[in-house]
Figure 1 (cartoon, one colour):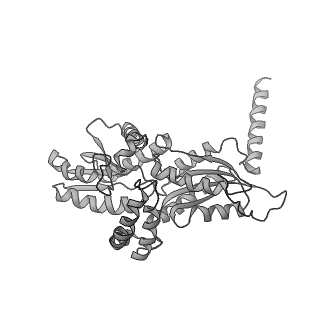
Figure 2: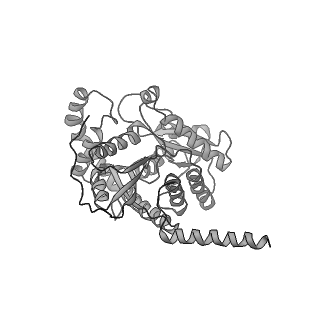
Figure 3: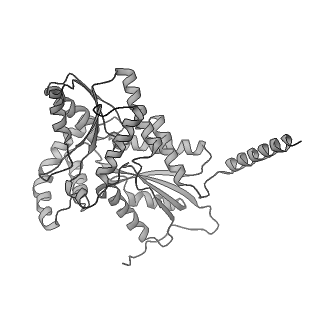
Length: 367
């Protein structure tokens, strides 16, 4: 397939070309209003990667039913978690981007970080255009989904690669597919739990709630289910938990089709009957808090658990802009930049001085 090439930004030969890192998150409405939610949900639910139903069947359901009912309900939920600076997902993603760049620059790496949203703003095309205008030559892309799924990671890559296909002067490109078992990230999640236990004590059970997907995605070969289980197991091992001290579930079911089980809502209703009175719960599939963690899990989940007879329900936040989580993501990015010329001149000089110092020590030892 041949696409019409986009005009290139003004280019001067000899210009110093830059290395960029692009973080991609799911997206968020611009405001907690029905109008903003309608625009956001239309883009999100029109993605064939997200809703794998033939368009001629899904289009009238989406446009005549869902978009006339759901925006108002969703706006109320977003309003309940909206921060003074805006949507939590956008606020935390922006903070992560800034602080990761600071860490990498402190390490002597000359890289320029930006973030984009798959749905909503800032869009992937608009951010790529800005990075190109700034002299982008190499691009590392990190979707902020630890566990790979066609409905999250793949659709982000679809849009990104479509934009790259239309470029005349394409950048060197590297994609990070997933980081579900990346040890520094697992350690950051475990540290969140340990800090929570140190402050509030340890509950009867630790529940890992992941975003759900339809069961047929697993049957068709999507690795998401397996990667979620591995993430949970690795965190439990890091914490020294035995079988029976932790459990996994899947949230955010939509529609009537069967999704990955067990469903979080059903688990929360059943745990008190099994003697679990104090519950710790976290969402390891989300590096940043958002509607699905702050409203669905921290608020709705608490109500469901307490109504079922539970006594204490404690939500453990995502890593957000915590220093441990930022360091882990910086480590991941740095590892994937290997081989690219991203060291600053100061870092090169420091490395050269260190080599000279070690050489002098070696020569002195040989005398």
